[in-house]
Image (tube, rainbow, N blue to C red; front, side, top):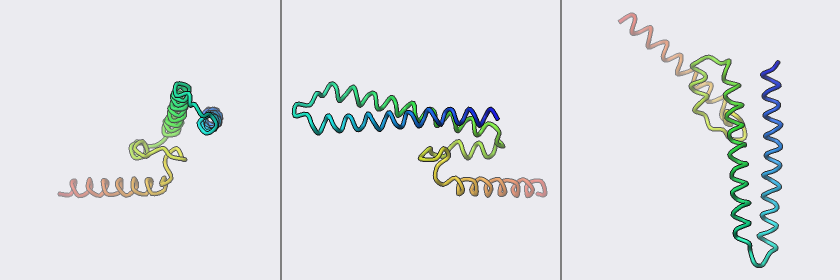
Length: 118
């Protein structure tokens, strides 16, 4: 399935990015802890590089989420699109988010029935 392959390709890039961020962080730590006269310009450039890599990592997560949500029902998309990305694409509380979405949809359906009767 092409969707699965696309997700796996993005995931592989994210793993490479995570490794690069980790190595960059270790290099900055080594530099800061070992050099007496800190090169503040170098540290600033390394920090900027780390921020850019983190931004790319986050953007890739959002891309993966959007691809995953493409085939979902509209009501689920709305609820999942507001969830925060953490170590999981849809957050650690995905089950709770889905339960809440289902409850809201059920309540909405009940309200529609009441309005039709009244």
